[in-house]
Image (cartoon, rainbow, N blue to C red; front, side):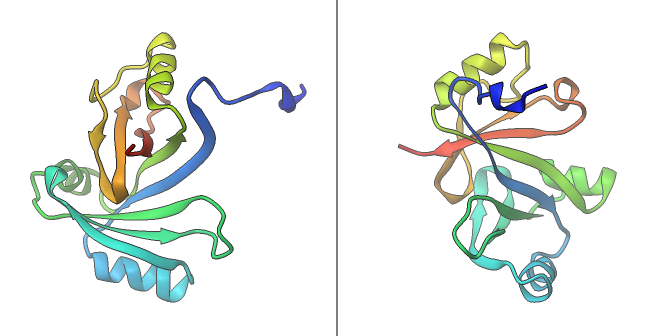
Length: 149
C-alpha cells in the first residue's frame, strides 16, 4: 500500500497538536517533563470553564509542532477530576490540529463520529476545541483544535 495517497481530510492539518496528560500535581508534572525530560515550558494558565490549570510544554525545541499539555483539575467534580478518580494520572486525550474547524467538523459528522460539544468552545492557549466521543474513536478521547480567528 502506498501511504502517500492519503491526504488529511477536509479541514484537518494532518498533525498532532498536543497530548493531554492528566496529573494530580501540576508542579510535579512540570518538574518531570521540563526538568527531567528537557521539554520547554511555554505557558501555564487556568481554564475556568473546565475548572483546570494547564501547562503547555513544547516537544521540539527546534520549533516543530506538537506539545504536551499537562492538566490539573481545580475541582474534583470537573471532567479531568472525574477522569483522575476513575483512571488515575495518564494520557487524557490526543489533540489534532484543524486548519478549517468548520470543514473538519463536517468531515467528522459525515464519518458518523459523535461530537461531545456540537460547537467549538474556547480552550487553553487561545484555541477553539471540540471533543469526539471516545466510543467512536477506538476508546481514545480526541480533541480537534484550531487557533481562534
